[in-house]
Image (cartoon, rainbow, N blue to C red; front, side):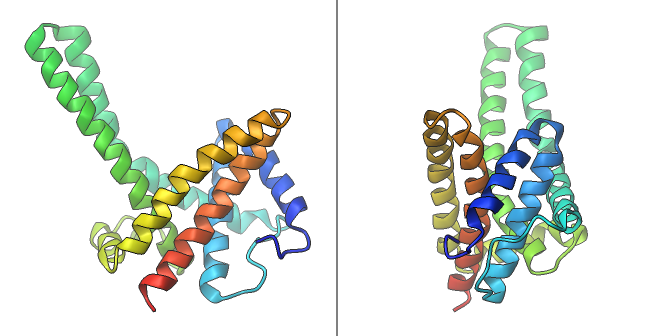
Length: 200
């Protein structure tokens, strides 16, 4: 990615998008940017960092990916709501034990949904749409087919992304925004490379 002559300018725009994450627009743009990076990596293009001059395709991909993620997170919300209701409204040791089990189930679902987004990113990068991202069987087949590269890529992103954000925060604070941009770029790149490795 650093071979791109304009990589710093593109990362600077990504950092500005990170400021808009609370308004969702930044999340959509950065996720769409990550999908486009994966798409270019799959196509073997030399310049994998997309320009920000045409944000609408990035926004469209990002909205589809984020909508998919929110749908996949519904069970997490239900489990968390159930745990909260048992602790707050019912009380008692049995309710607390069941609430703990529900909380653990919610945590496991959160981890699974995060891993599932590897497949969703690749489905979008390969030209799929919302219907394909919500096809549980199709995404599952993609992730199970030679799963090790996907697992390694996902763990790599989970380990490196916080380091980038924390390391950036130590650099005048504003660097955290660059770290977030790098995290999205890295995920798109690594997921696509994992796909290529799985299909060699």
